[in-house]
Length: 533
Image (cartoon, rainbow, N blue to C red; front, side, top):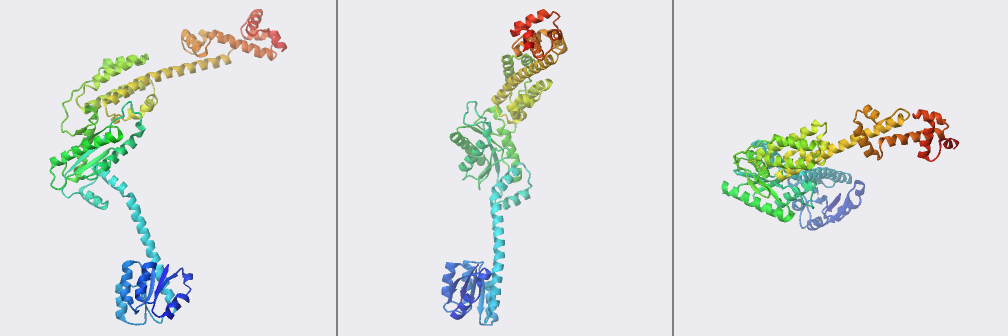
């Protein structure tokens, strides 16, 4: 803590500065002034936290100097050291904000006590100020997030009028006194199949870029730009002074169109916008936002790269029920693994069920119906939709994310292929397990009477089917495999000392000479030679 001493009596000035061990109190004498003018000049240079000064000095007295110092540095603690026991002087000093009025001759202990008291109080004030500054800094750091939460809650209709006024003022958001509001909602169109720069995993990044472009392009417009909970960009326009509702609506459409062009130019991708109706009260903004979202969702009907206005009535619905005969044909093709026929039928089903619809709502109903068809096909086979769909599970689970008829078609065609592939894999894995079980049984029961028909009967399968799949999996016929295993068993046991007759008998060879011949043909040596080692 720095101390400046301003005293015209040199002896007193030096005594206070040099005879008191200020360092023991963590105080440094940073400047000595012989008069008021010098004190003012030194104060500007040194900026001490505490000033001990005489009230009567040449050039400028203490009561004139004090307000000048406090104006430059309001937190400064000023201690008046005066030889005049005057109530007027003391009262004037207090009015000026002087910390203490000390009468001469004051002893060193008294001076130290007052100065250290001033230092202690100053430290506390600085701590409070620092805490307040840190709190303000944290609040300012969190302000953008708080404002975003306010906007998101606002468009969701979670505030009453009084809450809107209170919270907007608290978050430094100025609501127009008597404004008209129109919400527009923008989102990126689905990525094209040939797109190589981005994938579906980049959607958040692309949407963030869309938001940034909107903020930069529309910074001079009367609106707020933010992202809703679905990361779509929301443009909440409000009417300017004297602007009619029709003029506001035209401004919204013009700037939404300009923004789509800017996005196309910057990102080389397309986006679409839905525009809600005008509302006259802040509390009704949620209505305009919801209408804008509904308009945006009609991309599935009208296509991409469009500004779509909200309409109170959709086009007349042209309800088309899914053709049950087509569904049965597709199921049959899937059952037999005919992928080409299943895909062709799926496309025909989509053409009938989606492309002839006259409203976005009808399209969505048909999507849900067709999704149910696929889910039932999967569940009836005892499978899990998640296992079958794989990487498409999230999209299949959230059908509302499908934004175009093309996306719907691609998803359902992939599901046809995945169901057929999963069925093939399931059949394959079941066959492999069957063969493993049979091989394990043969290893255990090689000395038993093992035959193809006996094994087929034991494992509840057709003998011809077993013969075919066994050879496909093992590379040799069932009979050759059994013979090889018997010969391995014979060689192993003969080398361990078992008699030839006993081995032949265990393996079902009644004629020992025949056993010796087949053993010699298989191994190139006789059983006796194996026994001799």
